[in-house]
Length: 249
Length: 203
Ligand SMILES: C[S@@+](CC[C@H](N)C(=O)[O-])C[C@H]1O[C@@H](n2cnc3c(N)ncnc32)[C@H](O)[C@@H]1O
Image 1 (cartoon, rainbow over the protein chains, first blue to last red):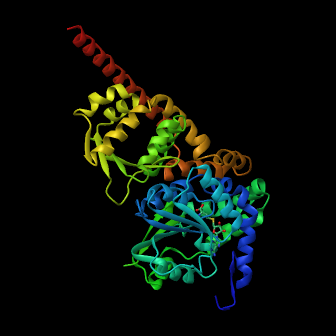
Image 2 (tube, chains in turn purple, cyan; image 1 turned 135 degrees about the horizontal axis):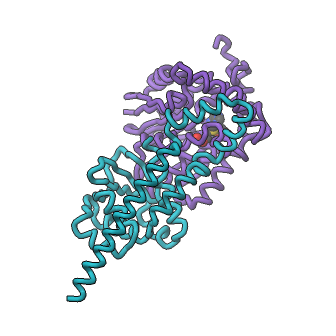
Image 3 (cartoon, rainbow over the protein chains, first blue to last red; image 1 turned 30 degrees about the vertical axis):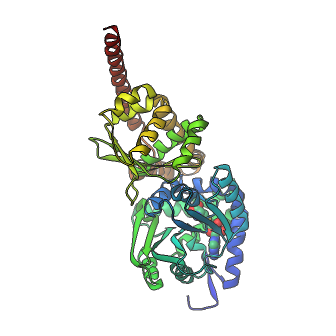
């Protein structure tokens, strides 16, 4: 990016302030049907990706967990089970509509007592240093305007020994499969979006934002830049998705 | 795919728990504990973590479990089918390591669920496709087949071969077959135990 005042909104370049508003509009418009669309978009496989992320989180009874960009709370819900009565999960999202959906779902599932909700921008974490054992961001980092800034903030808020977990679309290995995947996300998804959520622009944005997201090695480098150590990543489904992990030593 | 297995077991357990509010309630006492099931002779293990809405099941967790129940798959299957059998099984065939009090009470809770494996497996195999995994897949694929014949086929192949997220018909049949065999074995075993018991009480 040559112009410091502009950033990517999907493939369109937009002014930085504008991106946040546009991202908000996207999620406002999909909040109600978000879970259905998730299943459609990933053919249901996102549940398995999230499960693997949880297994890599190292979260256990008594831990303090911050879930950023939590959306409707697929990760938060599982964390809430793992940390037990003496642990704590802070479920957060920049978008109040998504957070509200998530909150209702948590109450439905009986999660209470060890979970709280907060409207938080991942770039500006309002926490003291060394506050959490694990900070996760699932399919959220690509929506964040200044990703490096978010990674730095995550590093600061983690306790020594804690880890960050980033579940995000990534760069699939080249081959026929990649072509298929491209067709799926650019041709099919926006139409599905239109059909189900009567909103093809939002899903066009999602597909584009996935392509603009840093690839596996780049993201790993950005984590190291933020101060994380022992960084690694694991590709899932041929690299469509990757889970990055880094520790604060 | 391993995540598929834990997802299936999780679906079965939680379906049963949702029909059994008392067990679900009792489970709350173990919120966040890790109970490991070690399936002897198979190298397979599952981690169960009780929570407010049921039990989460994972294939691997980094930290050690609070307790480990170790037995052959048949013994576990048997245990899930009824509390009466559990006492016999607890003596000898089921090994408990770590927090043994937790292991015992959790084992009893599992036994109390009276799992009908055949029904459950039939339900998830149908359900996983129809509901859990594919609430959207079907309509998605249907829609695709109208417009993108070729893509439809590729996607199905991709799902089955690459991701193995959906069992093929053949695999499903194999699986149900194996379950049938297991059930017959168990029934024979049960009949034998009953005969022995009858003989014993006749003495
Ligand atoms: C694709 S959803 C992911 C939800 C959930 N983690 C999941 O995996 O299902 C992305 C979420 O990121 C949120 N988001 C976008 N920009 C954000 C920011 N700067 N800080 C925090 N959350 C943000 C959106 O509101 C949306 O709920």
